[in-house]
Length: 170
Figure 1 (tube, rainbow, N blue to C red):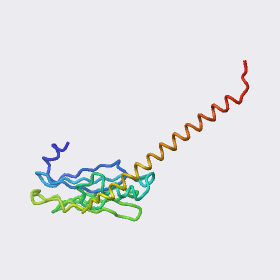
Figure 2 (figure 1 turned 60 degrees about the vertical axis):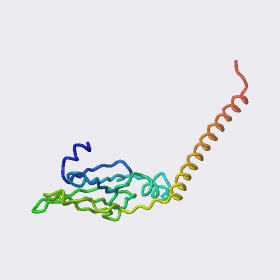
Figure 3 (figure 1 turned 60 degrees about the horizontal axis):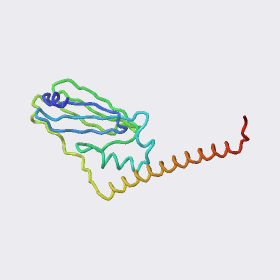
């Protein structure tokens, strides 16, 4: 797929199913390759993960290496507006509960070699926060494992006690 789109100038890819929104760009031989990702119109990772962990994971650990805007993590949907005319362009937007959250205009210039990706969104990777986030996730998983095993053992014990307390019928 990337080989196919590498031969096209100013390509825009739309994607989703990641439970957050982002805008990425990669420089290509024929001009920039843009990706607008929008997902989470009905749910997002904030629904089942504490917001601190969800925000940190998406902004610092996930694959947002080519993000040109800060990822948006609340409920959202994307819109694409194609504007034809003397200088055609594509307007990419992500909308949330409070209106437009991500807005970017891709100029479909006739000379794509003049177009380049904008500067990347600065993401400061801090090792201590990454380790803390990973540790919290591991602790949460261990707690869930402990809770599940406790529930299974208590259910098994109740079944055994119930069977022993009933008189044996022949």
